[in-house]
Image (cartoon, rainbow, N blue to C red; front, side):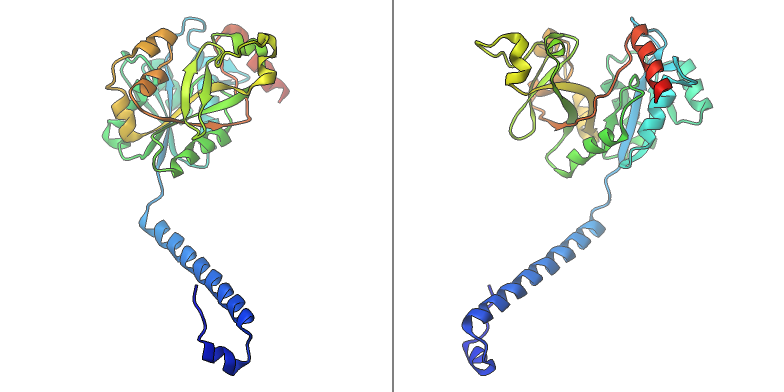
Length: 297
């Protein structure tokens, strides 16, 4: 707090109380000016973060072979995902990473960026890591791993995920949505996540967690806020490289969820909650539903 000299107050006829108020106003203005200058300098000194969206796509699929090239009302699934991802405001670039020449050729045909990767990868995370090891793509700060079977993905979800990295402590981020469907809660094909007060994941599970003791399972979603995990990830590039060097962990093997390997090795995962329900295409039935949704949209 800056005070006006007492003599100056007497000579100007300004009361002590009014002088204090005046000084308070001056101080507020001063703080705003300093804050404005700091923000401007910080913007100049710190370059904008570069986000790379990668869509891993493989042809082989047990339940729906060749699904990246499945047609949905005139466009293939991979093209629809690519178009949606390209609408995200925070992505600097988008590309498809595949191990199949048919997918490579088709993405090139519609004008998309695509790279060929190894066919030995166990996950999309591994495929993304191969891409950023290459000279052309290694200078991105954050990689967004976008599921290639979600043609309805909302670009705002991608931007929401990118916003997590305003916090310099965030190394990995993902999304979740409140789960209000009791059937989904008990479905092992719907991964759930428990979120801590610091917005980091405590645990991911195919089981209904937490267990509500003394409550009828049909009432659980009315008694507690459960979250469904949405399988889109973002990683700082350095962290992504580290993750692929980790050995598969006991929890990962038990639940068949790769993110548990990261938690088990001490990597915190920031979870951002979204309200948009994305739809993934895993079966021929899912594909038919998607066609109807696009026809009615």
